[in-house]
Image (cartoon, rainbow, N blue to C red; front, top):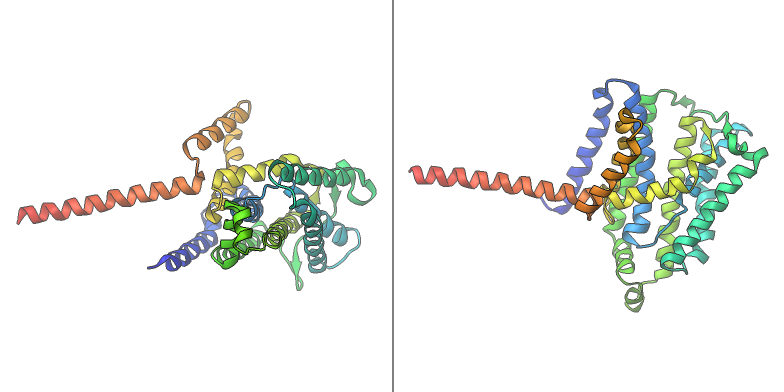
Length: 331
């Protein structure tokens, strides 16, 4: 089985596992956490394309997440638009804003690019807070309808779980194909050396703008799914803290690894929930776990999982070889 065959088997196993997980859960609480993990996974896969593959840092990605959530929320909640229409406009608006931001911002590099995206995120956060008549201000915006298509309302958590993780699977396959395409090679070349890539004929500006807009589109998809699941949005979900959390998920999962994005998003979604039992010390344990992961897994969770798999496979091969040698010696 070649690499592509192994990749397809991995995606198929992931899809089957995602489909079966709800039947193994003891209650709907875990289903809710998994749905939130799905939102984070979509966000982090998109951000990993930008950071891990193209090497462009964004500290304002939560802004696109929130922009899409508020847009569909206002259109469907206040103006009674059909949900699909609200979602379509929210996705279009978020990607259009991303393009407008990308054109001037991606001329910056390194720390200046990070500061530029951070500034955009802060501006959007302030607008969410101050445009009270439109967004509800710090109190948030309520009355967003549940997700519905063609008369079908996805009201139960289990139905919504399949919608969210179906979107995750679709975007994961899209990302895997993109990073293995010519465009993916161009993005990695930009990450390695933008100057060298330009000398070799790569249109670095065009590719950087494209991946930034694509990454924002992923964030917008997560935003619309979030808004119609929670039916309430507030500025606190789309601030600087969320942007930093997303960057942490990318780094911890493994830069330039789509599966790493999935692992990082799920790990940092479940970790705070697992630490609720030690309420007074959870933040200390959370920080310590992150530090230990960074120290002993510099390549991220995906790299650690790969090394663990290779080590286990090596042990199995040595055991098989030893058993075969023992039988040969017995004869």
